[in-house]
Each structure stands twice: as C-alpha cells, then as structure tokens.
Image (tube, rainbow, N blue to C red; front, side, top):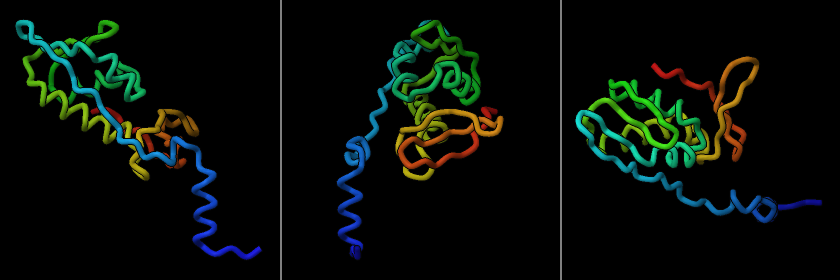
Length: 137
C-alpha cells in the first residue's frame, strides 16, 4: 500500500493513547508555608512530592542544598531551619522540576527515576527519552 504523509500522520494520531493526545498543562501545587520562629514549614510538602512523583527525601535534599539550610521531613511536611519567602521555595521547586522531573526531550512530566547498567537515570514514559540522573551537590 502507498500512503501519503498526511494519511500516515492521521493514522498514528488516531492510535496514540489518550494521555498523549491531550497535552494537559502540568500544574504544580503552590507551596503552603508558615513561619514559626526561625523555621519555615512547608505544610503541603508530601503533596508536592506526590505530584512530581518523586521521593520526598530526594526533593528535600535538593531544597536543603539550594537554600543552604538544614531541612527535615516528618511524613507530610518539610521543616527548613531558615526564614524563607514562599516565592523562593516555589522557585527552587520549579528548578528541581526542570532538572529532575520534566523530560529534556518532550517536556512532559511523565518521567521516573530508574537504573540502566547500574547507573541511575531519569526515563520518560511518554517519549522513551532518558538521561543520567544529576547528583545533588
């Protein structure tokens, strides 16, 4: 059979899974913060980690290094030992999302951390792209 490009493109589009057909915009929840003395508490930290589909400890390690402050996780909220503005925390979570969550190829948030030949990688389940997991410094 001879197909022209448009016919093939329509055929592929019709057979795509629905989650790939609808380019829904990734919505990151805003961090809910409250100040308590010299501490900033992120009350919806577990929810943020769940939306990103990352372990809370990985996100917390990143935030701790980026904000230059020790931080702990108590099961649902994060406590940072420093007074911080909500916008600063949101910016750092956005930075984390760009590096560790969003696909570098297609830009979708459908990624997971896995291993390839003993090396940790981030793999996109939407396009199949992957890249080495950058260490948190």
